[in-house]
Structure formats: structure tokens, C-alpha cells
Image 1 (tube, protein in one colour):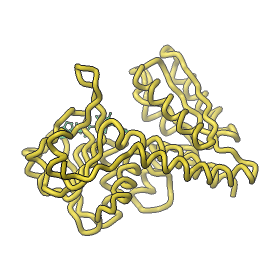
Image 2 (cartoon, protein in one colour; image 1 turned 45 degrees about the vertical axis):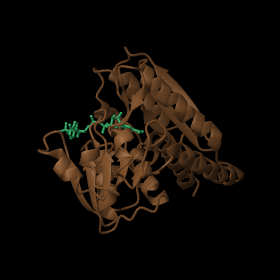
Image 3 (tube, protein in one colour; image 1 turned 60 degrees about the vertical axis):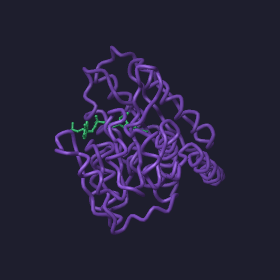
Image 4 (cartoon, helix red, strand yellow; image 1 turned 135 degrees about the vertical axis):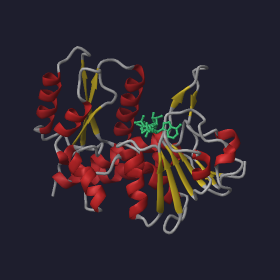
Amino acid sequence: MTAQLIDGAALALEKINQLKQSVTKLQARGVTPGLATVLVGDDPASRIYIRNKARACAQAGVNSIHHDVPASATEREVLDLVTRLNNERAVHGIIVQLPLPRHLDAQRLSQAIAVEKDVDGFNWLNLGALVEGAPGITPCTPRAAMAMLDHAHVPIEGRHAVVVGRSTIVGKPAALLLIARGATVTVCNSRTPDLGAVTRQADILIVATGKAHLITRGMVKPGAAVIDVGINRLASGKLAGDVAFDEVKDVAGWITPVPGGVGPMTVAMLVENTVDAAARSAT
Ligand code: NDP
């Protein structure tokens, strides 16, 4: 392996320990940050994500309050719960875990979360702030990707960054954060002809497609920083990223593993967004 491994699990632990100190200071001012999590239905992967989020909150001293909602709930019922949480003083952050059952409109529910409690950063006001470079809450996964690049001291300004994937929760905000830092950014999608020709130009390659092992060795520029956001369950039951780690690690300059990469750091960023929201509510 020639690439330097960016260990998301270790970095997340470090972050959570720092946040614990911020929480202690907030508690001295009478505020304990609170995160409300809402799970509609019983998707097993979602339940694991919720459990990981609750564990990270507990480690940082953040209260997490979980709400299980039956899959049969109407949109009105979920909206009523969100409205109640919007009005609860002890709740500083709210997440509605995705994906949602088909009869619920994820966009409408995300937009119902109060902008100051939108710790996933999906509210259009927060996304608009990101476009403008104004203060707001930034989506956790792109924040995690940037934090990992910074931790590894990967130069960003003036470099060519390629983002593979254009979702609103990962690809687009990641591109905006890179633009804000002075990178030249290319965003690819499933229609991009000759993806490898584009990714081979990347000094920084962020991949968020949900396609296991899409990025192979020949698609990576030697020395590039490769951030693998993908989480895919293989037929064997093992987790894999969107990057063929075993071969790309020999050509990249830096690489994140899956599991143990962007995933745990994303959770740490969620806790940080919650602590920051609590701090803002206390001023
Ligand atoms: P989406 O399905 O919303 O978006 C996937 C994007 O990838 C789309 O823009 C799609 O293009 C593009 N894409 C798909 N196939 C290809 C291809 N062959 N070549 C180029 N682009 C392609 O997914 P998300 O952004 O929500 O998530 C992406 C991955 O990241 C998933 O594996 C998800 O589980 C993971 N994830 C991990 C998180 C973490 O904490 N580590 C958090 C969030 C997501 P098009 O728009 O044309 O369809």
C-alpha cells in the first residue's frame, strides 16, 4: 500500500472527545444539547445508523431522544411529530432518517424541520446558505469528507477535484464546499461518458454513487486523495465502498476505508451540528 490511510473511526473518536468538552461548557450554562431522531418503519440498515448516532451522542454527552413511528403512519402524523419537536426547547437538532416509506414525501418532511434544528442540513435555507457561503448548517457527509481532507493536509485550493455523484445530500454540497475552498470542480453522474477519463484528472476524488467498486485502479491519478462515501452491502454480507480499495490503495496518495472511513466521521459531524445548534440557542 502506498496511500496514506485516512482513518475515519479514529478521527471521529477524536472529534467526539473534543465535542464532549464543548458540551461540558454548555452544561455549565444550563444547556444540554439534544438530538431527536425519527425512524419511520423498521428498515434494518436505518436502525443501525440510528443506533450509531445515539451511541456517538452518548459519548459526547448529548441527549438523544428516539421516536419510532410505524411504517403505516400518515404524512400528517409524521409532520405533527416534527412540528412538536420543532417546539421542544430541549431539542436542538432533529433528523428524520432516510429512506422513508414510499407514501411519505421525504422532501416535504425535511423542509418541515425548523431551519435552526436542521442538523442534517437538508433545509433549502441551509442549502442556500451553502451556495452563498453564508453561515448555516452544512450537510454532515460532505463536511466529513472535507474534515478528512483537512486532517490529512491534502491541498485543496487550485487543485482539480472530481465528485462522482450529484445527490443533494452528498455530491452537490461536496462540490460547493470544494468550490468555496478554491478547487476547480467537476461533478459526474451516471450519464458521464468515459468516467475514468474524468476521474484520472482528479487530484481529489470524492465518490458517492452507491455502486460497489465502481472506481478501479486505472481510474485514479497517482497520488490523488480518494474519499469513498459509498456504503454497499455485497452478496457475501460484507460492506464495500464505491472504490476498489485493494487496488486503488496502491496508486492513491490518500484513501479512506469502508467501513471505518466517511461513515463514522459523518456521525461525528451530526453530533457537532447538534452541539453548535445548542450553542446558538443559548446565545
Ligand atoms: P443517490 O442514489 O442519491 O445518488 C447517487 C449518485 O451517483 C447519482 O447522482 C448518480 O447519477 C450517480 N451514479 C450512479 N451510478 C453512477 C455511475 N456508474 N457513474 C457515475 N455516477 C453514477 O445516493 P447518495 O448520494 O445518497 O449516496 C451515495 C452513496 O453514499 C450510497 O452508497 C450511500 O449509502 C452512501 N452514503 C454514505 C454516507 C456515509 O455516512 N458514509 C451518507 C450518505 C450516503 P444520476 O444522478 O445520473 O442518477
